[in-house]
Length: 152
Image (tube, rainbow, N blue to C red):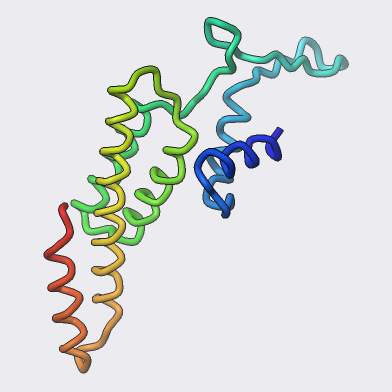
């Protein structure tokens, strides 16, 4: 259930706000069950999709997060900063629910968190800088200086 998942995440990771995880929760729920309609007049059959060992199937894995990261990079490259900011935030929210199989993958997830953190910070600075007018040159210069410290 969603409630028990939220309690576990709160205990293990200290998460307090679950709204950013809503899309990831729904994707996980949808990917862990299969629905089959045998005939129009019969009720649908719901069957759990499992991995070897009886564990539920999980749609958020390290390779899928890396693909989403590549998409976010493409958004930054094309100058769509607000969309890229949302993409990096979504990746960060999904990391808590990702499936890993080794310590190496855990290290890669930690590296992914660092990359996303730097891009989110840099994109927030750049989006704020673009909203400021030409009359606030001092603040624009400050934000540009802060942006240079982001490891992008």
